[in-house]
Every structure is written in structure tokens, then in C-alpha cells.
Image (cartoon, rainbow, N blue to C red; front, side, top):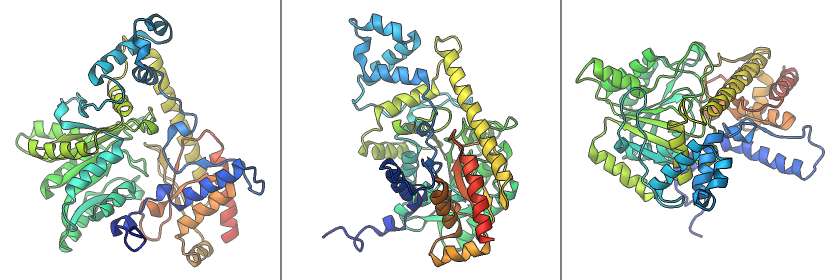
Length: 468
């Protein structure tokens, strides 16, 4: 046999992606047993709070977006023999948008040019700087693949972090350079900690090429202020680093005192204020999977380049072309995301109503879950700011830690397995994202409209009492 445990690429063996790891696999096995009618399980359903997949719950698609997509995928509805009936079912602006898109892509299923988003953040964008991708994850993989040219290339990643980054860095045989977020300061970034991490990597002869910043944070939900973003831009100029700005949760902000500010806006503002300075390369990532759209399955996203020359852009174009193109429905959804109905359009009122409703529902569910954590013994949860997650810190009793280690499990993984087995709630242990040694966390979404807060409180009390 050619491909075996001993012959498989060792970089794949090193990669770890805990969000769909052992606990999720166990949850799916339990779900199957429930469907088969097995009765000796202490709950009747699984709540998959391990992944930010809004439409798995009661998050409905945006009407205008799905109307346009339906017309593009079945263009016969726009033909002369059907158009009168179509006008009775679809608003005029949806029909017009579908016609425009069909003129640009000819038909769904045809290969289309994967470029074309403009006007973001009050600064112009060039279609030549934007590449459509199958979600932001594939965009991140493309950039990391281009950056990691040998096995001593370092990429700075936050801890805790979305584990895609450490997994992909391992796949391409690079080196993660970890910088720690400040939990006591609502998971903010500390420029001194970042400087120290960079200098330590340099001492170890690692060639650091880029810094990853997730804003709003995943798993933390923290939103960065303009001052912090400016400090990261200045640090990157000083150290000649490329910035990868993962901004897929930019619509998911629940603190009325906060506003999303993109890295591109701050960088361009600084360049205007100080001509000739801040020639920093920036890659901005966005996706239709999150926000108030929540179209995870359609796989649409984009990356925007700032500060890149034509040679590098052509190499990226070549790399993207090798993978042909992202799904055309995903490309259409990106167009709808960045060009939604405007105030005078027929669909604007219902679009705005749906978007506001989704945001308010998520805000309320986040507050409700945060309140539950605040009432649990030995649990600390930072203020809800953004994204789709909470990342509470749990004080795990010593007896539970010892039992976890006897089973070759991390204490937070042990806690999450017990939570699943007792309540059917599937979450992700903090060790999958990285955490300060000796601290324990887990990440949960607040997308479910079920009784996740009650299940968590019930389990946590039982767990603490058992191992006290």
C-alpha cells in the first residue's frame, strides 16, 4: 500500500482543527443514535454550538439575496414566456439584478472572472486588487501558501486564535509565532506582547513575514479600537510585516458604543495623513458565511490586496486559476453582500427589516448566555462585543484535572466531553484555540434559540459538585 500512516505527509499529521475534532465526531455519533431511537441517552437532541453556522438554527436567509440567486440559477424564469408570472412572484429590483448578473457571468456553471468588489471604507478599490474565493478560509490558505516559502518562515497569530491559521501554517510547514491577547482587558491586543513575541522569534532565527489579526475576534468576540489598529499598522511598518486582517465578523457587533473599523480604512487614512509613509502590505478577508447573512453553505468570500505590485498579483491570479474558480453562486452572494438594496429600491424595507431583526436576535441571545455564565460558580466571561461566540474561562477543580490527565485529555476537553454526554451541547475546548497555560476555556456560539443556557447551568453545577 502506498498511502499509510507511515507514508502520509507529516505536515498533515501535525495540523489540528479541533472545531470539527473528536468532540464533534462524538456528537454526530450520538445524534445518529437518537435518530435510531436509542432511549438510554439523557437528552433528546444535539445543540451544535461548536461552529458558527447560523442557518443550522432558525436564522433565515435574506429574502432579496435568495430571490436573485433563484432567478440566476433558473434563468428560464426571465424568458419572455415566463416573465409575466415571474413579475408576480419577484420584485422588480431582484429581476433587474438577476439580469445584470446573468449578463456578466452568462450562466451559472460557467467559469467567471473572480474579481470585482469596489468602494469600501470610504477609499476606492480596484477590481484588480480583489479576488473572489470559496469563503474566507480558502482566501487565508492562498495567502499563507504564498508567504511560506521555506520551513523557517514565521507567521504571527493571536492566542486564542481561529485554529484554521495554525493548521494551515503546519500544512505549509511554516512556524506559528504566538502573541497573547489580554483576557483581563476584554481580549484586547497588547503591542508590547506582540513586540516581545517578534523579538523572541528573531532570536530563534525565525524569519517573521506576517501578522494575523482577527477583528472582531474569533473565539473572543473582541472588537479593536482605531488606536490599536493604528499601533498594529505602525508595528508592521517598523518590522516590515504583511498584515492579514480577518474581518469576516464585521457586521456582528453588539456593543452600541463600538463600531467596526477596517484595517484598510486606517491604513489609507494614515497614508493620506503622512504621504510617503506606511507602505504596508495588507490582505483583507471577508465572507458571506457570517454577519447577518449567514450563508455558510454557499461558500462565497473575497480577499482584497493593498500595497501589492503587479508581479505578485499575477502570481496570486495564477494560484487562484489553478483551482479554477469559486462556486458562482458564492460569487453572486458576495456581489449581493457588498451591493445590497438601496433606500429607494423596492426590496429595501424588507431587507433592512430582516437584517435588523437578525442582529437584534443575536444580540439578545448573546446577553442571555452571558448572564448564565455570570451566574455560574467559577466562570468568568468577558463583555459581549462581537462575532458569534462567547469564550468563558472556567475554574476546573483539581480532582477533575487529575481525572482528565489520567485519560490523556486536557482538562477543558474533559469538561466539554462531559458536557456533551450529559446535555447534548457540543462546544469546543479552549485548548483548540490556544490559551495561557493553567487557564481553561471553551467556545460556544449563541446562535441557538433552544435552552442552551439552562443546559449549561445544569451541567456546570453537577460537574463542580461532583469534583469539588
